[in-house]
Amino acid sequence: MGLNQEIDAMKEDLIAAVQGCIRIKSVKDIEHAAPEAPFGPGVREVLDWTLALGKEMGFSVKNVDGYAGHIEMGEGDLLGILGHLDVVPEGDGWSVPPYDAAIVDGKILGRGALDDKGPTLAALFAMKAIKDAGIPLNMRVRLILGTDEESGWEDMNYYFKKEEVPQIGFAPDAEFPVIHAEKGILHLELSKDNPISFPHIDRIQGGERANVVPDRCDIVLKGLSYPDTLQALKGFSFPEGVSGTIESYEADQIIKILIQGSGAHGSLPQNGKNAVLFALQFLQTLPLSPEEQKQIAFILKYPGTGFYGEGFGINFEDEPSGKLSLNVGILEWTSQSIRFVLDIRYPVTFQSSDVLDPIASIAQNEQYKVKILAHQEAHHVPKESILVQSLLKAYSEVTGYEPFAFAIGGGTYAKALPQGVAFGPVFPGEPDAVHCPDEFISVDNLLLTAKVYAQAILNLAAGSKSL
Image (cartoon, rainbow, N blue to C red; front, side):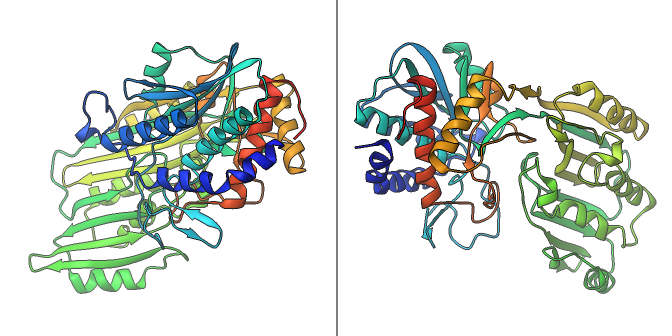
C-alpha cells in the first residue's frame, strides 16, 4: 500500500484525533500553573494526551517537565517538526462552541483546528504512515510538541536547554508552499500614569494578546449625559463589520459601551477590524477633557495610523519579506493610567533598533515609558537551500500545484532552528481562519496536508521516493 493509501485508510482516526485534541481547552493559564504544568492544567492535559497518542502508535515519546515533549522515530541525524498544542483564547462570534470540534460542511471547527493542533497531528499521522509502510529512514524524525507558542516561547527556551536542537526542520504552522523568511517580531508596551484622575474615562479594555487584532473593546464612562452619548453612538459612522452598543447605564452616570470589531492574526492587521481603534475614534466625538482627548489623539496618530507603522515613520519594506506591520493588540486605560501593547513585524533586512529608536523618541516626548515584552530576530533560509527545495518538491509532487517560496510576518517555531522553515497547512487561495471565530480546517485539506508531510519527510530523511 502506498503512503497516500495508508493515510486515506487512517482518515477516520485522524479526524477523531484532531477532534479529541481540540476538545481540550489549552489556553495558557498561569494563575493555575503548578510543577510539571508551567502553563496551566489545560496545556499540560493536551501535552499528556498527545504524547499518549504517540506512544499508542508505537513511537518513543518524552515529556520534558511539562514545558514541551516529543514523539520520535528512526535513527541518525535529527530532522525536527515543530508544532504546538497551546491556543489563543477563543474570543467571541462563534457559530458553534469553540471546543466542541463540530464538523460542519466538511470542516472541523474549533479553536486550534488550524493553529496548530490539526497540522501537528497531520504530521504525526504522516510519521505513522511511513512507519506502517516499513520505509527505512536515514534520519531520526522528531515531532516536537510546544506549549507556549502563542505567548512567550518559554517552552522552547526550556526545551532546547534540555534537548538536542535539530539542525534542519519545519514548522507546520503557517502556509504552503514554503515560507523561507519570517520577519522580526517586537512586542512593545507603552505606558504612562496620569497624576490627576481622568474625569470621564473610567476604564477602556480591549484585546487579550498582542498578536491578535482585538475583536471587542469595553468602555466605562462617567459624568457624561446618557442621552447625548446614546445619540453620539447612534450617529457615529462605523464601517461594515463594526458596531457599538450601550450595555448599561447607571443612575450615577456610569455608562458601559461595547465596541465590536473582527479579529485577525496580529501579523495581518489589515485583515481585521480593530475594536480598540474604532472605540477611540468614537470617543473623540464625546465632550471629554482636553487631557483625555490628547491621549486618544496620541494613540490614533502614532500606532493607530495605517497598518504598516506609518504613524511612527517606520513603514519599512524589503524584497525578501515585504512590509513592516503594526497591530495595537491591547489597550488598558484606567482613571489614572494608560497601557497599550504593540505587535510589530519588521522586515528581515532591518534591525530592531530601526524600529525601536523612532518609537522611543516619540514616546518620550509624551512621557510614555517603553518596555520590550518580547523580541524574536528575523529569520531567513535561502530559497536555493536543500531544505527549501526538498519541501517545494514534496508539495508539488503531492498536490500538483506550483511550488514557490515566500516570506511572512508571522513568527513560527522555524526560528528556533538553524535551518528551519514554515510549511503549511493553509493552501494558496484558501481562507486563513487562524485566531478568528469559527477557526477550521477542512477534512480534505487535513488529509492532503498529511500526505504532503509524509512526502516531505521522505525527501529529507530517506531520499526522494514517489508516493
